[in-house]
Image 1 (cartoon, rainbow, N blue to C red):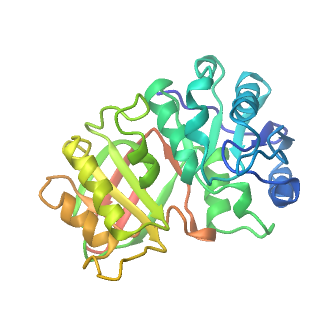
Image 2 (image 1 turned 60 degrees about the vertical axis):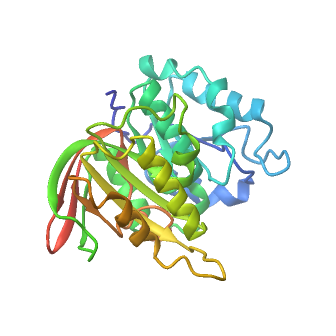
Image 3 (image 1 turned 45 degrees about the vertical axis):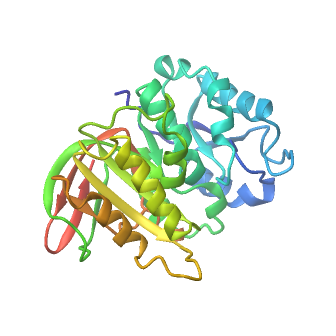
Length: 300
C-alpha cells in the first residue's frame, strides 16, 4: 500500500470538486484555514464552475482532477464537497500517475467512490475526512484537528464510548469504506472488489430505513461481509421511515445483518455526517480495533 508523504509548511495543495457545484465564497474559509497551516492553496477550474447540479461537466471535473494528479508540486487534493457525481468521472482518470506521484486525496460522502476506486486500483492510502464545504469558521474543531493531525503526523487515534449493540473483540486489518449508499452503488465494479481480512467502515445520511436494509442485504448476499476483520459504523444521520414503520433503527438493521458472523463490530463512531465532530481516518491503511465493554479504540 502506498502511503503519501506527510505535509510540511510551504507545500502546495489544491481544492477541486468532483461532484456538486460550489462557488469560491464557499471555499474561502477553508483556503484561509489551510494557509494558516502553512500550505499554499490552488483552486481548481471546477471551483465556481456549474453544469446543472455539477461543478462543470464530466470532462471538466475529470480534467481538473487529472491536472492535480499530474502536477508533481501538488502534495494533497481536497475535494470541496460531496453531493453526487464522483462516480461519473472514475473511468476518465489515468490513476496510474498516483503510483509514481503519490499524494493525499481527501474527502468523504460522495468522494467515497474515489477513495474506494484508488484503494482497489492504485493501492494508495487516502483520507476520509471533512471537506471545505464544512469549514465555515477558522476555529479548530475535532474534524479539522484530526484532519490536520493525519496530514502532518501520519498518526491516528480515536477512542469513543461503547454502544449497547457492539460485539467485543480485537482485530487488525486495512480499513476501507465510507458512505454506505456509495459503496452499495459500486457493487459489481472494479471499484469494489474482495473484502476478505479488511476492516469495513460505513455511514450514511438522509436515507430510508428500508434502503439501509436493502443495501446490507446486498452486501451480505454478495459476500462482502462474511470474511471481514471488523465492521465499524459511524453516524446514520437523518434517517427516514414510512407511514408503516420499518420497526428497527439503522443500527439495529445493521446489527441484525452481521450478528451471526465471528468478527467484532462497533456502532456510533463520530465519523461521517457529523459536522464538526467528523473524525478523519486513513482509508487504505492497517488499523487496530479494540472493542471492549467500555470503549471502542481505533489506532492507525
